[in-house]
Amino acid sequence: MESKQQEYTVKILEQLQGLFNEECENHIPLTELEDNKNASDFFHSLANLAPAVVYNKLTQGNAGSLDFNHIANRLCFQNAVAK
Image 1 (cartoon, helix red, strand yellow):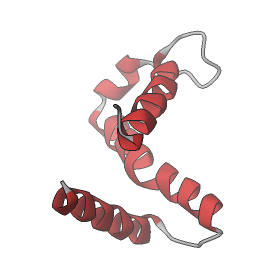
Image 2 (cartoon, one colour):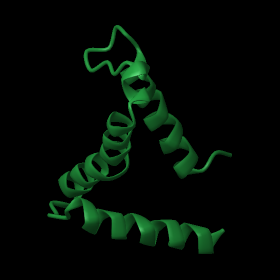
Image 3 (cartoon, one colour):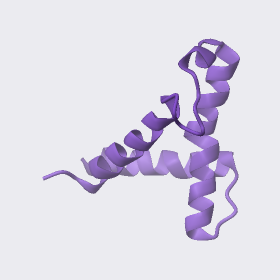
């Protein structure tokens, strides 16, 4: 049986894959990410900014990207210890 984390990860990845599809309204060409600055901006947006926005919407919180990073680190530790 698949865990909820695995299920959510697959669903999120399937949606993210659409970003690289030329027919997607929000298309991001992979060649754009060959530039180190663009790649850095993309991964910061993906790993920090967008998750903080989702977190704040779901919790009515006001966590900035650094605050959310601390939350994410606690989740990583919590899940590493739990397994």
